[in-house]
Amino acid sequence: MEITNLNQCRICKGSDLYKFLSFGHIPLSNAFLKKEQLLVDEPFYPLDICFCHKCGMVQLKQVVEPSIMFEDYAYFTGASAPMHVHFKEMASTVIKKFDLSNGSLVADIGSNDGTLLKEFKDKHMRVLGIEPANNIARLANDNGIDTINEYFGANQARLISSLRGKPRVITATNVFAHINDLDDFLNGIYFWLDENGVFVIEVPYLAELIKNIEFDTIYHEHLSYFAVRPLVELFKRWGMSIIEIEQIGVHGGTIRVYVVKGESKPSPSVEEMVRREIELGLDKVETYKDFAKKVKRIRGKLVSMLKGLKGDGAKIVGYGASAKGNILLNYCKIGTDIIDYIADTTPYKQGLFNPGMHIPVVDFYEFYASSPDYTLLLIWNYADAILKKESEYIELGGKFIVPIPMPYIVE
Ligand code: JHZ
Image 1 (tube, rainbow, N blue to C red):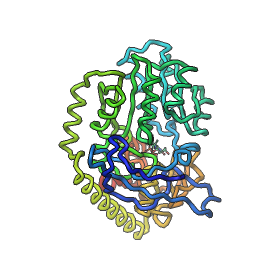
Image 2: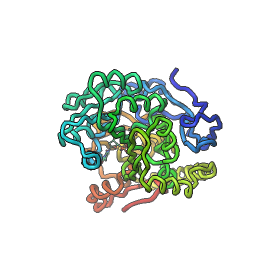
Image 3: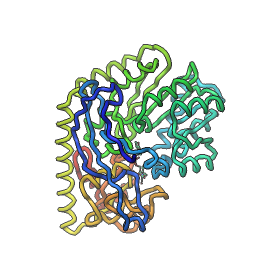
Image 4: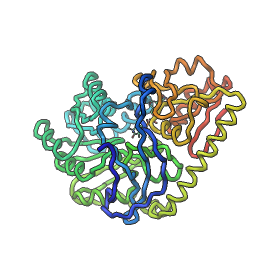
């Protein structure tokens, strides 16, 4: 079965799920195509997002079979320079906060190309990655980061634990939202984690998604959209406690959550975050109905802006062939009639075509050589860094269009 429908909330198992936004049928956000695949029927899947009336959890209605999305993967963490800086900071913070001695075992689930583990390894930790994508696990191993090419769950945890021992730290960055069976996953974490260990997750924060109308971060890979409140409940059920949460700027607003085994009092900031979530209305369905209206407004404004510029003869291109960019382009039906190409730093994506709209992905030589009038920033999450990096393009008359939270032009 390629796709199943969720009929129960992933967290509280309640069955009253309210669909507040539908994207219609849309391709998978990382399913880039080879030229010959453009002639073949492309799979499109429904994409709807729901709110659980019982516990407030926000989640997708559809669950696509993970093997279709993750076994050959197009997102390489190392292709985004700001992520190296971010993970360097993360490794230092975790080592210092938990006073890790040299040789401590640090495991990363969904370890991708090993960018995070490399930072721990450079700081004298023993490291182990678990990564389901064959192409990416291979690259990580080639680069000297010990990586097991597997999905993670209760069974794998038992096997890996007997072979490799128990980690002091388990990290899971940008992967917790991708897990369908969170109980099986946490069963594995609880078993594998050392008694005095810490589980550290980084996950995009629902409060930022709602505040900044980051609708393009909603896609089939992201099954859950976490606020703090449901997370507290989830870990409690597994005999674990959140001890601290930090808010981090990456990926449009992320929370870094520190979890330990047993009962521990959370820092006051955790309760404060839950209070602010209620103030923001994250527990009310009206908030999500309002969000859906704003999403439609962004689409209307962006499409009319781009069509107007194109009608005036402007050359327009895309910047960053991100997963979120593919959702934005597909939802707004922005294709090659408007965008000539998308420039991207990932060698794997260059030479391919983006899913659905079939816009060619090129490397940055083309961007610098072709002097486009307007550049649609499909990685608005890196806006500050990119506007700085591309200051010469702007000085020479180039303009960026930043689509989120409401389309505007930077010149
Ligand atoms: P970026 C990823 O989403 C994938 P994406 C994943 N599904 C997830 O959960 C989220 O992150 C959180 C390119 N790039 O980081 C490289 C440039 O071209 O917004 C990548 O192709 N130039 C796991 O894909 C893409 O952008 C640059 O200067 O939406 C990454 O986009 C930079 C910084 C990146 O993530």
